Amino acid sequence: MAKGKTKTVFFCKECGYESAKWMGQCPGCREWNTFVEEPVVRNAAGKETVRAVKAQPVRLSEVSASSEERTETGIGEFDRVLGGGIVTGSLILVGGDPGIGKSTLLLQMCQKLADRGKKILYVSGEESVRQIKMRADRLGDFEQELFLLSETDLDVVVETVGRMKPDVVVIDSIQTMYREEIGSAPGSVGQVRETTGALMRVAKELAVSVFVVGHVTKEGVVAGPRVLEHMVDTVLYFEGDGSASYRFLRGVKNRFGSTNEVGVFEMRGCGLVEVTNPSEYMLQGKPENEPGSIVACSMEGTRPILVEVQALVCQTNFNMPRRTAAGTDYNRVNLLMAVIEKRLGLRMGDCDAYINVAGGMRISEPALDLGIVAALLSSYRNQALDSSTICFGEVGLVGEVRAVPMAEQRVAEAAKLGFKRCLLPQVNKRQLEIPAALTGNLQLVGIDTIHELLGVF
Ligand code: TYD
Ligand code: MG
Image (cartoon, rainbow, N blue to C red; front, side, top):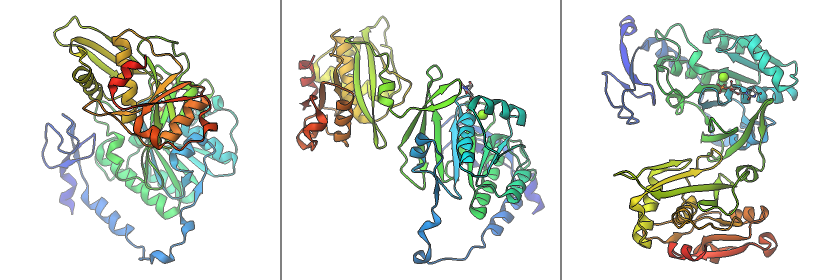
């Protein structure tokens, strides 16, 4: 067993792929130059695994359904992404860029939980207890049952959790935690995996819900949260445009609920504030009747969100036209421009094109296609679409406009926000079962091909 101690292995710090030799490109995630060499201690990990297997098999019919108990965090947008609250005994990873607001969000959650009498342990390996207190002071009053621990040794943390038996534990961040048996530095793939594994066992054995913060790292030897995704129950990413104050909490994986929900927050001086009507927020400051500006509707989980799609198309001064897409898929924009060129005969190939989804949100839903095409056409022809029009629909390679799911919800959202005209796939319009009272004076215009778009300006 002792000879295992000196062995080293190469890990991809993006996805955790393990290999005996160094490789330039990771076969797992196809990233370049991500391999780092780390010592491994097989015997320590092996012993742990054997010890963990002591549970007895149980008949499915004998398992009580109440084993999936949920506690609401008290932050509606957070609960939405978690699928209705924190499942007792689950391990939740909250990833995001440094400085995006992960610590703030979790401290606010602790505040709400402590208010309702839950016992909370907040472990920080990054900030001293005083620094956490200073942050907490900005966020308002805190109840008694919130305990702080400034510690990076995971064994101390595990021992404290065992002694204190809190309801919820927050580990901020996993990259600062270490276990002595693992030879490598804190933040390395080996450490991050081992400490997460230990926290997983604590969560399951003591029925404590554990939140783990993971920084997304662009370079350096620190392992990113993707390394852990497969180990934990739930993965949430906190994202946003650095310049905008909106923050989006997105579910990427959830063993206890749907994954594609999004929670919307705004970062203010007194912490994060929930945005319960994101469409209104996303459309704030939208220009009226300007060429290249179109309102589109995207579904984020079960909620429709209206966004402004902006396009700027102009003659290129380069050999190769410049194209950028902020907030949506670059390749999709290129594809849609090719469809416009071929099907409508417009010379998009000579044009630079810049696409932006305003508000800092990232949307990859195909229902945004019609909005992108309309914005490109509007800018190319320098003709505005009136600002009371909204559109959604998927565009296919022959220029056909295809049906999208949940058309009712999208139409209802458009009507609620006072839009007058809605361009939608003809197929959707035909199948739409929506009471007249809901649509109000919203005029529905069914579109079969992008040819028909030329007639709506
Ligand atoms: P933080 O939660 O420390 O980010 P992370 O843990 O993801 O690294 O958030 C830091 C940023 O949030 C920092 O730039 C300051 C800002 N902030 C506010 O704007 N208002 C506040 O009330 C707080 C606490 C932070
Ligand atoms: Mg932090």
